[in-house]
Image (cartoon, rainbow, N blue to C red):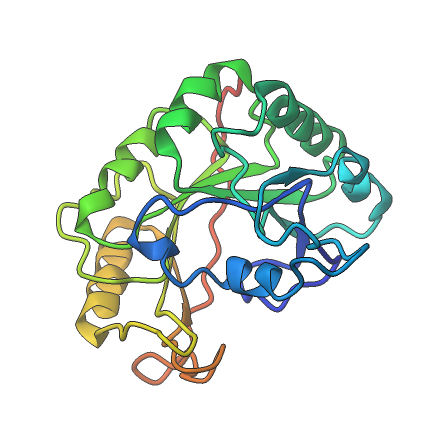
Length: 242
């Protein structure tokens, strides 16, 4: 957790919960799990429990202490909609995001069903962006779930991209992040999968962000795609938010 981040599409990370469980193929080589498990059993380390789920209520007010506005990735080391995180804790996270209205919060989940279930009970503040991860065609229905809610920005993270996203509709989507996998067991991404998404975003007015090609080490593949870097960001929609 830091008020700075090496992730290209955000500026800081905030982890009021840490730890998670695998739910789909994109989780197979989870960077967060790899990092956390290095510290399992180390007394007094924040990841003494490894990647087991843990709530950190003492971290809830952290964004309120960061006075400079920034984009904040929520739960970069977990999934806010994990089935073992209490509804009340998720609502507390949303309350803090509303109070810290000088920041922009980026929430990303693979648990689209719980997102839809809880969405009516949450206040969708105008500074909250909501996204789902879609790594292959089997999970394009996560975008359909995302379309059922009304955040200021809806986004898709196609990272790690493990196949073409045939059948993915971009209606109602504001932003798409694409990228390959990194790490010693990385699965290679194909250029045509990336360029297909880029071209579809251009045709439908969706902001496109290419994060990385991936490779044995983070960022080892670079970010150049057809001679340029794609760093597009969305504009928040004007919505009647609940």
